[in-house]
Image (cartoon, rainbow, N blue to C red; front, side, top):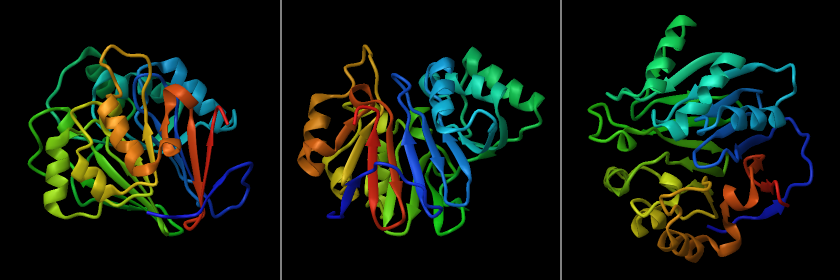
Length: 270
């Protein structure tokens, strides 16, 4: 995939989509602002303080509204930070997978949503959300029948604006990648959020070939899991170029801004 890219100094146009991969440590958190002003948060990372600080850098102090919150799956490195977000922000809608899983934090999450009158929508392949101005969010996974593991029940999202696409793969394994390949869905994306923090159990060569990303983002922090795997980083660098493989552990929050044709990228470290 060959596209023109520019480093973003400052953007103030009203037709821009902004997608930020927040630096929250060893976990995922993605904040999206659409041209129509919709604010979407996907996952919240493992640390309530870090996600709130990261959101505070993206939103003015008086803005306490998140239109759509998506929990890709209930593991703590995606869920824990959302507990504080639920306390501090007014949440419009919640999308999450329907999964059998127990942890004290997840039990508290379900209880507090019920107390606030939030009835989540369960994600299933084929759902589409029109975010206006040509921005569309689509759920590619999980299927109606579900998958065996919590990670593989995670929500895979495609976000498109004009010629620019983002593929957000949660913590899925190669088993789900094979399912997506077999289904023949369009996986080509300008920006790939690499699955499972770059773990060795994801990012098959044939999956990466189908995605053909210009940029690959690994949301990762200090961890005991050897994430990201050197073999995965090598594959990503061979596909997108070493300069276009971005790790939050190295460059901080990574923000992509697009008008649907051009793409700008900015990181905390330049």
